[in-house]
Length: 71
Image (cartoon, rainbow, N blue to C red):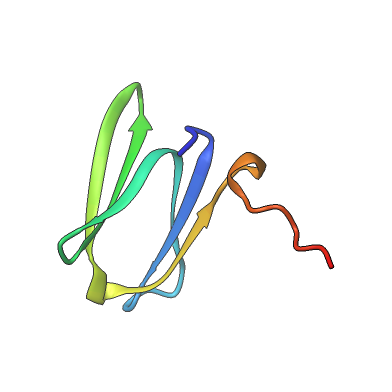
C-alpha cells in the first residue's frame, strides 16, 4: 500500500468509523485484521478481531485499481 492510503474501520459496537491515514499495509493474521501505519514518524500496528468488524473501507490510489471494463 502507498503511504497516502486511508482505511476506515467500523466496529460492531460503534456508530462511527475509526479512520487511519498514512497506512503502509493492511492484512489478516489468523483471526485478526491488522493495520500498519505511520504516526509521528513511528511505525504502529493496530490489530482487531475479525468478528468485531462490521465494515472495512480501504482507499487505494488509482494505480492499484483495475481499469474500467470495456465492451
